[in-house]
Length: 394
Ligand SMILES: Nc1ncnc2c1ncn2[C@@H]1O[C@H](COP(=O)(O)OP(=O)(O)O)[C@@H](O)[C@H]1O
Ligand SMILES: [Mg+2]
View 1 (cartoon, helix red, strand yellow):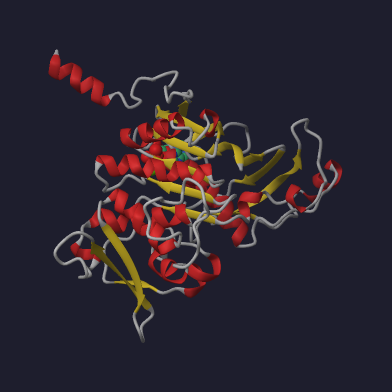
View 2: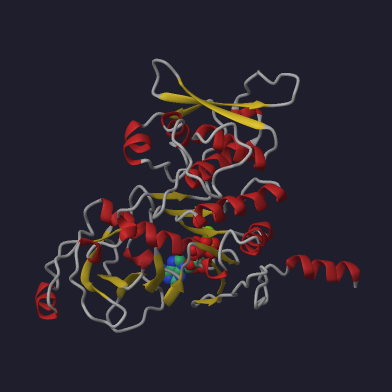
């Protein structure tokens, strides 16, 4: 698990150290830097997948010094996961130090990994200047096996779902490599339906993710049960279309006159299709999976948003790491409730409130206790309801 993310001269952040937990909630005003946090992890992942962030052999500090400028690797700014533009877009406007450098670092348990890239205004690949040797909490280099060289999050199963996801459609692409080979749902969830078709028989492991009211432990029934919580009474089906590189999604509604009649996604509303990738990402997660979510509440009614929090908390409780950006009171309250119910320990739910003032980002991090109560409510942090009620009543 990533315990801490450090951003240096990166986008809205001059320097920020952001603690992360099994379930991390990023909240705050628009344009306060929330998505940029998710993008930094996606950037590292994308660079690694392209072979631009290979594990660097363990070296002494003197050897590492000698390697400066020789390591032909870097941050790949534009790719499948994120398109950040050029160095000029990524370097923090008001960068510190004489020489512009962009630094990203993660801590995983006792290990610290850091990458520093040079600023190249027009470049798509920002060349690495320095790779910090993995070191333990005491600062000692730790040459102990491959896990000390490549951080786990770069190779673990991974999902990243943007705010802008698939909309109801007749057909979805049937990309065998993405959905079956890599198990990746796509940043817009575009491979979800095909993934579901291939993995329908997978068993959801016992634990809070396993829905007690589902017809079986199979992924397809589990997904249907969770979808039913988000939109009561629905069931889902994913079929291949013979002779075409596409799969079809259909919905059924139980308890209605036409219970056996299938409905096309475009006829059952936007919310369902929008939310399916998140349900599948959470249910297919395994210990160590990293899930990045932008606005999982989008297009859901209030109770569905609370249920969404339960689902993501369940994935975290079963060993996935979920980092999500949300504007929803219902999501934040749903996470508090998950803590109160004991689904997550208080320390496993991490809240950050981002406040951008144009020059940088201030991060306030309320803590939750075992009763689901938060120790502080900074101005602007989910206080809109109260403020509006005050005006209505006053
Ligand atoms: N290179 C940069 N230097 C300084 N600020 C930046 C830079 N790139 C983006 N920003 C700022 O980051 C913010 C956008 O961050 P983003 O993560 O998209 O916000 P959110 O997801 O919270 O809406 C904007 O305020 C923008 O001005
Ligand atoms: Mg955002």
